[in-house]
Image (cartoon, rainbow, N blue to C red; front, side):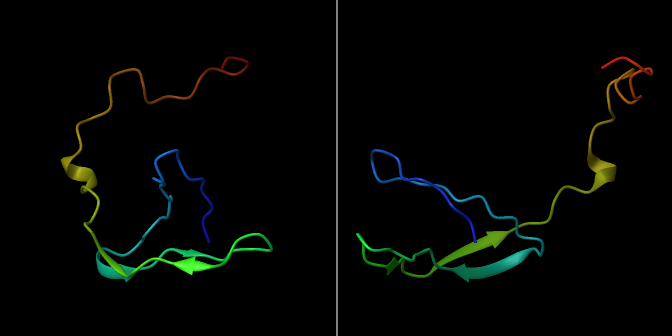
Length: 73
């Protein structure tokens, strides 16, 4: 379950990690409470593509790959 807030124009975003590439159907459900009724969105489809392969990423900048010396941050 993810939690978010609604913006002034009714927009919102929900962060959710999807581990398997492919296409799936999602819905957003708002459970409601004592002052507001529950609701759910219509189903929508999201296609997730695989991450870039590590071998195709540019190399790390020189001097940026080591840990700091002891006592330094």
